[in-house]
Length: 458
Image 1 (cartoon, rainbow, N blue to C red):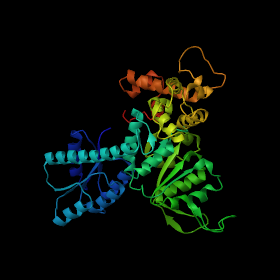
Image 2: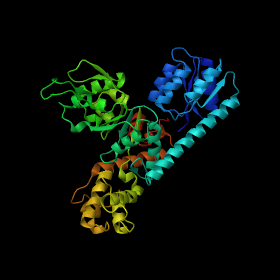
Image 3: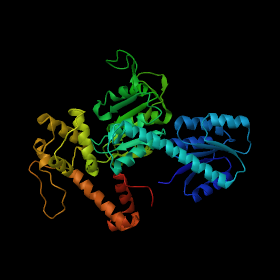
Image 4: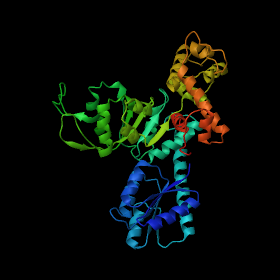
């Protein structure tokens, strides 16, 4: 993924000159003609650096710098102006500008400053990552794993934590979507404020509006006192709406307005209240399919899906199983246990099992095994479905075990393999890969996005 740089200047020629210069260096440049447009882009997209003019109408560069630093204090900002004053320079540095320079400037100077700012920013991120790795063995903010898929996930979480952009966390049940939401919160500047999580499918439809927005005394039968909702409880922090696809359509409309206007009313109340809660959402259902079927609002889908994080199923990160077994062993047994935790035969069976219930199922299996044998997880202490599991094998013979099987994960795994194989055969050319599989390019892109494989390139 290219480094993205936001260029903000009310002079078109200056924006275009800087963009050309940056793109020749291999960066991706995005232009904004004023401070307000820059804020809109910054709130809905991820950037690694900002180059900003000071003298602009509506919102000048100093004010924009102050607001950018509140949104993402770690992102470096370079300030430029044709009318330099010592006072402006002091103000810019005090507000956290990485550097301040005047027009006209030398192109080599710009290249060097951009390189230096990005290197120092990367170093800060690496230091944060190092501290978190030390705090959590082989993991990140409570998420256990060291596989390539998980390391990519940790980097993505760090990036989105630095912004206020909406994040939709997708994944099968039991993959750790709430852990990812907590990791985003704990990696952000909101970490000292509340993290409030709610499962939208677990609240009765008649109560969910009151639960989210609160209610006034006497608003309905049983409302014996004023009640603050989850948006108020999470003010300044993060509100995590799990299983967002379960929200009724009427509530989806009201939620969309709150996300757009950042204000709401309690049930039965006329007072408009402001909210500063960052909203993260999650679903184990295909929301795009729900949009097509009329079960989810399209405008809300695009509002919450600015950045999408896909939690990989456990069968796609089997190299993490030994670490997870160790983690759960220490949770349910002796945390200081230094001997063997699992026999090689038992570990082999776990590595061979497809885990339709993902990490939650593995946790239950470890707990069950340790109830039967407190010393070590052995082959005999594993459930029958694990002991009898067979590797996925594509043959003409179809075998369904007597105890049943989880078909959907196997079909998804097969579909993903064919997508990757087609891309490999065409050297990454998606249109050719779609033709190879006899599907439209749109359908091919849809399936890539479903599995988190779509980079957005043609």
